[in-house]
Length: 522
Image (cartoon, rainbow, N blue to C red):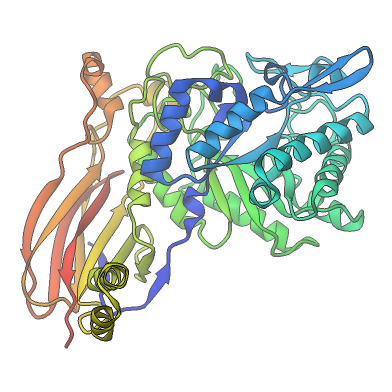
């Protein structure tokens, strides 16, 4: 039996917000589409994502760079539209500098259906001028204080030949020139890389920058839960890595490598991560993805500064226009905005309060907010604003008399069990897989006033906030509007200042229990 022991008077810590720092989103020009902007706005509201990262900001379809009669010309029209839309949502761009404009490219090697050029610049002075003018334009349009909050990442996965046609030292040169251009605009703008696949070149870039006096503010890399790199058109048959903690182990390895470099302690951003790197892998659609996300994010706390899930939406065209509503796409939402189990994992995570009660259980969060304290403070502020100094002073004098008695609690726990696959992902995850086993979870909450309490239970699991399994069983379900699964309500009584809850947790199920308790003052 698994046990989660909670003490309302116990030690608390602040929640690590690296989980919602950033989310990925295809390539830049897709953000000119209303559908994607609407989905990004919904994810920002429900899941709390603050930044968005995407490929192709320098791609030809953004029309930023052209050479006319041997002269460099710049057009910021599409760029401004994309970034203005992001900022209007209350989000910020995590700027990825790539791919190479055709007129500046040294070759014609391309990647993806939308043909991103992956060759180095033909002229490094022109590359410097492009990045300098790009950065300067952003400062002029949005202000230096705003742009200083945007991380600038040079390129995408240059260690993999499909994304960069040259070698490590050529990338380092390209990074150095871009870094100098950005810092020449303003030394406080953040720049980093190498944005590699599979955690490579992290220590090497750190040491190169130190040895060559090149500015770098963060290191970045990518990892996924299957072996290999890049399934460009979704044709591979893949299997999940057989270790339970593949991404957690990769993050630990990257952090360890950094600590042996000349940049120990530098921020580390995972600017892409998920269970699979394939855009046609149905594991992305499965309910198993929800506990995988939560298990991984909890396991990397303290080692990384952000984990950017790849991606927010199946409005995504690396392999071309999407073939169907459910096709194994990377997104938290489908093309038409149906929310996958993975979306609810982030939504539940975002619902947590900022204060966490420390427990020994690894696959859970216990968050609390002291209702009376917050209510009293709000009353005081309103009284000061609307009533007058004398009355406000009387309210203020009583502040804290009952503070901390009433507590909102949000308990999020899950089981992540590696699926017992006998077939590749592309077959196994297109079949129905109900829960196979369960374990009783006992939750004990200490220092609760003896009373009856109403608690609310939400879950993610097989056919519960799992539209994909419902779709496999009945494709006609998409004719109806998707509704979130019903919240269950239980009434439970605390005795001897303890509240005991038992829950039969199924394999790969996520459970959220919320309610308001009265903390014992004894």
